Image 1 (tube, helix red, strand yellow):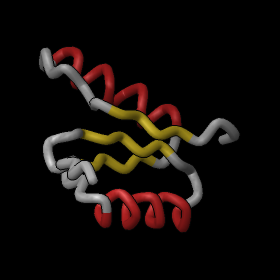
Image 2 (cartoon, one colour):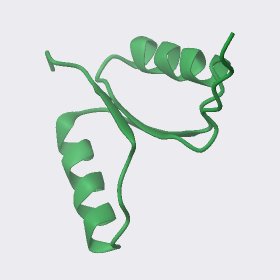
Image 3 (spheres, rainbow, N blue to C red):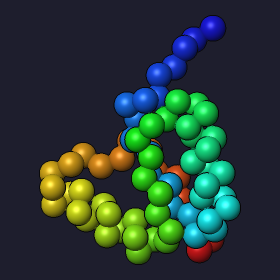
Length: 69
């Protein structure tokens, strides 16, 4: 059985529903993800990505976004 290490993988969660957002965070942490950014809407996500780009940060490895916000 393969063992995966997710502690260095950065995840951005963009979800307007607070319950779903917290649940996703809990599930990701159970799988070993430690670098999690939680955002409430698409505007926050866009602003966060712009700031990361300005800082020459490669940004998140994975983005989980609600399609209906």
